Length: 370
Image (cartoon, rainbow, N blue to C red; front, side, top):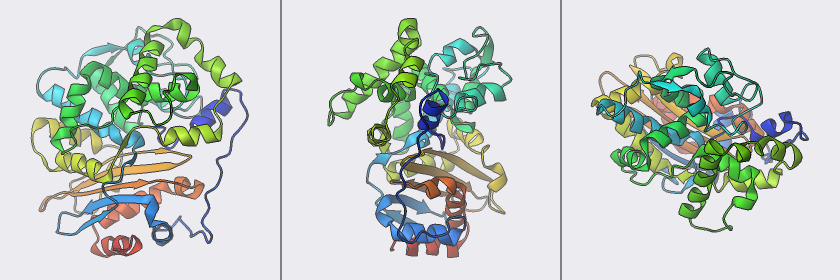
């Protein structure tokens, strides 16, 4: 959800005290700048990991595959498939000009990275849309093609883009997209609503409330921010005068949208292995961020990941081969440390290699105790 950028960094940049996440250091920390170090990390705490890997050549690994864990931005693959399905069925026109202010309405200023470089700021800047340091367009009447919003949900993991798509498509469309991969009730919520629940805990339902109650509370806050200027004006003062504590952030992380490695795997594998227009359109978008990392001889590398820098790393990826079924891997890491965050890309490369190199697949199996 915060895509390897910290809400606490946003809070600090807004004028509050600087926070440093407490370390969950291993007793004898490995060198995670190397694949071998990551294998040692996984072996040291296999209970932190949920994973499903199938390389398309007959090898399969499952590890705590059905255990629900926070998914962060990895769930945006659901939003993307719902969007491409609507395009394929003629319900949405990717060239439709969208008012940027209507996109901005789902960005609560903070919660997606440091001020001046957050995900929504990156999205607008990448599209050449002038914006302030909070990522709000200087000209909200400017128009942008709808396809660009969908792209930014994946390319820079813009939360506001995913929220805009959910607002346009509705939950029925997102559930139908998830169901294609055997995931009929993906835990989709407004990312903006979740951030606002952290900033305004007085609107949170009591601990232990059903997920549907929590989701409704966050969605209501997202709508309020989008349409109520007086509430919108309260956000930045709240952060600067009463920022969330590290304990609150960690507890909040564990209450955000969840799913299992098996559910995320099913969705990714459905997208990667299907040939209908909706799946192919989704492949084209998911294939952009890590195109330079695709294994030799493969046709494409699809990817969507996410993280909370105080707790969670998630990833889902697919290698498309010209002569065999796609390989798919999903990995969810809980109790993530600062070193885990720092070397996320090394873990990602290890996972990709597991889908293309049998020796690496076997090394991953051994590290997780299989």
